[in-house]
Image 1 (cartoon, each protein chain N blue to C red):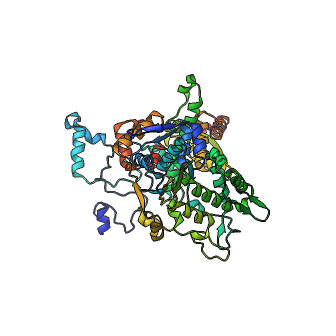
Image 2: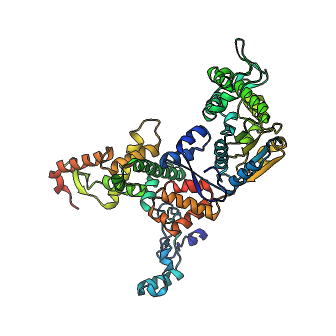
Image 3: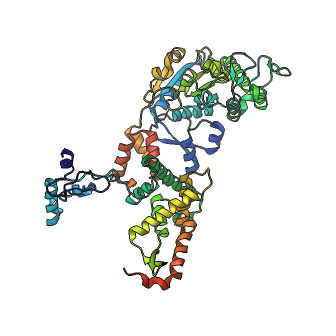
Length: 342
Length: 232
């Protein structure tokens, strides 16, 4: 199921062991419930994903990394497209840096520490350690191969010398939770510097990239608002998303649902990224994700019928199908919600 | 005067009254009920009998009452489910009640499907996955056959066994289910979770609601002697 080229509208199966290995933290909640109920993970192949895969296959890795921004209205399948691309790249053997939702890093953070590395910035130990744990499960073998190129000091006594595998940096971050965000920064910097050598390909997959340039809901102890630059995680991620490195690609998704202080009808890159974000991400390839086409809708409906998800008697009739299509407006999320109780 | 005429409430035919009716409809008797089902309009003229043709002509002429918001022409609507949702509703929050109901049905479906996929081949047919069938069967299992009513005779009140109408039985079954789910649960369990548990137990004739029904039957059986106090 690696190379799905002309199979638009069909669903392909991901074996369950791979799901746990590749996506420890990436899939949407409803999709995870669906995997548990049906005992299998099925992803629909759609045009935007095929487009992206074609670009990735044909891209030249000596040039600077190309940025792709997936955008679309609410519930049209942007996160699922991203997951499809991530799965493809991990099958091909790339190193995948998957951030499930950048919005989680700019809101609802209980602990903010002052960074030891740089006095102005603030650390987030909890989110950083969670991310490091998931990164470890998804990219086991790369952590052994890649070696650090500099000596890093964690506080007064601990340090990591040159030439040690990256796994030690990650374990240091997990053991000493206080320096977890710095560990994340180190990992990102190492990967960026070493990717142009060509021993591995790097895919940076960020969901909800508009969180990096908006506002945060976090406050410092003196109740003054925190801007995203002051968070170490966000600062390092911004450096990653800049296209000054080569040997990989950057695929991002805009997301309105988690975004802060943005109206719910906004879905274009211009509105959601704001001026700062748009200028920072400027030369990017936009990939719009539309609602289901009639063929995709029929395929999804057929899948639900086959897995006995639509149990209502009337749902099997033509009338029921027409009604589902009308009520959901061919929007994947609405169809999923409607088909739940039926 | 203008609003009274819009309601079809002509002062000449009824008792003139200044108060506008809120809870009971006082439509003029010439108003007809709305017909929601699509199938009844698609039948061609030849299929209808004489009375039905007269009905259709009447509908073209007479005014029709406004359709209530609970009446829908969707193929997926079920009157029992809407009644249950209305009973679950608190302070008019129908949005919340309906979402709770849909989450309950989804929960039942998930649980049954998981059981179905794990069961061996010969047992697969016995597992019922349709949440609507489970809901209707569970309600039927919870309905009491006979009820008790308080009758005062000679200064003392007796609990007299009395037959119940269909509506009363349905109401009691739904009421017991909802009160059971609201009271006897852990503080952190959500309503859909608890309701789906209760419905599955009632479907298999187990659980606290069925027990309550049996207790009522036993009380009625023990008070058989007072049955002649009933005069209706």
